[in-house]
Image 1 (spheres, rainbow, N blue to C red):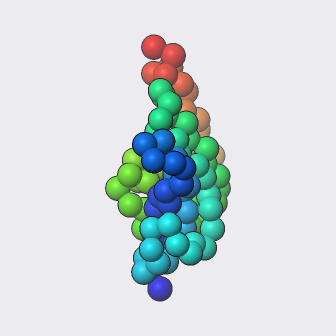
Image 2: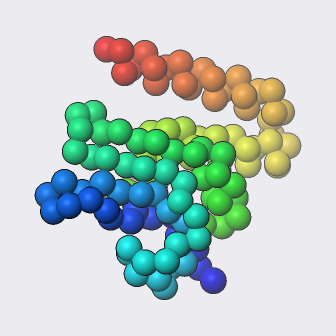
Length: 116
């Protein structure tokens, strides 16, 4: 079973909001899903993203493939970078402490960019 992390549309016409869901690739866009892991509202400036990062990371490690838009959202939230670091820990290239330090340093840089 191919599993995707994708957006499911909700809301009214011209004011769409999206749920970030884990679903079977064969199910329709707004159809059945396995688990809801977040929300995305592109109507505000800046857009509002609420995401369960631990759950998203778990599904990525289990082989779920994100769509392009969801991959961009996960990258902005740092989930893709954390996955990259965890793969390094699993392979023995870095330790868990080093990975955590790198992630915290990345988060600080991102916060500084938002302030400017």
